[in-house]
Length: 286
Image (cartoon, rainbow, N blue to C red):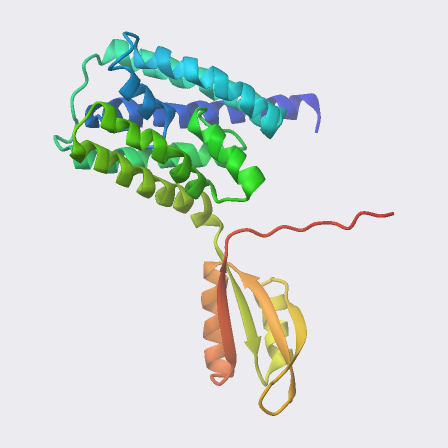
């Protein structure tokens, strides 16, 4: 890639990251802050701490991010660290801008519960964009990324686990209802985040045993333009040898495949698995 194309790609990444951070800032300022909940984020912890520390939320968020950024650089590499430095600076800037333009913001929905729901949906969109770019908005996202890398946990589950302590911190300031909403919001935020991150990547692993093996193989390769693997399988009841065709398809291809099998061999034996992550590990030459 030449320098011109590289600069264009960097510019596109910067624009996309800036837009994602702006979406996160909107979720925090207009929905999380009025709800008074503390949901799975440094911003949520900052809202609690702002009751004890006479500083704006943007300043508190920036201070906590600095410590976690150093940890992120050490554990997750320079690419993740450099991108997260940018987003960690931009998020407090956006929050500070909103604090100036929209001071003393009140609930947009008029309901604490609806504020929490709106926050979860909006912030998950922004976070999913950043995580798919190997970045984060800083704060607890760095903790979740570390857990994802070293403990192989899904990002959403890591966010929920690391965010529970933050959610429980609401008990220091707010009533029981707010604490419960913070805990539930943290849990569902992880689920929704996983949906946004992995939902568009979900494929199906289809395993088929059919009498029309060759016809099915040609349909997968020539019509679906997909790949397949053939394994020899032995039935435990009569020890009969049959071939099993395994292919991985997306939603549209899956529907075409099922229609073809139902039409050509309704008695085919089929098992289907959901797949969200596929990797090829090349062999290392000695």
